[in-house]
Length: 85
Image (cartoon, rainbow, N blue to C red; front, side):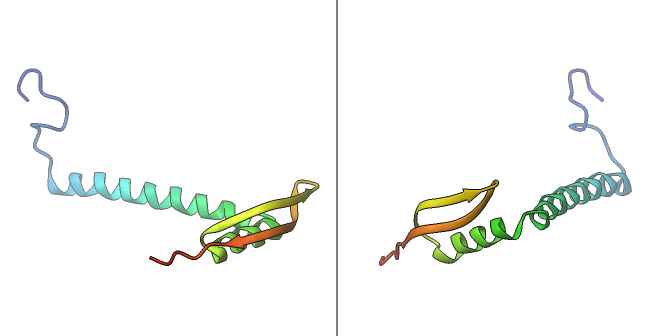
């Protein structure tokens, strides 16, 4: 390695080692993604229903959400906006 070079810039890496590095990074990203998704399965069905409602309206506003014991129980006055252009 020449003087002042950063690790990995001018070094030769065997193809198998390079694959192992990128494979590890991809596997780590997949595991992190699965962990994020697993948190959705831990959500209460009331929260899942609210999320589904938000996805269904797409664009719009929810004026009031009633929460009881930390859970959404009622959504009042949902306005859906439809983009015409």
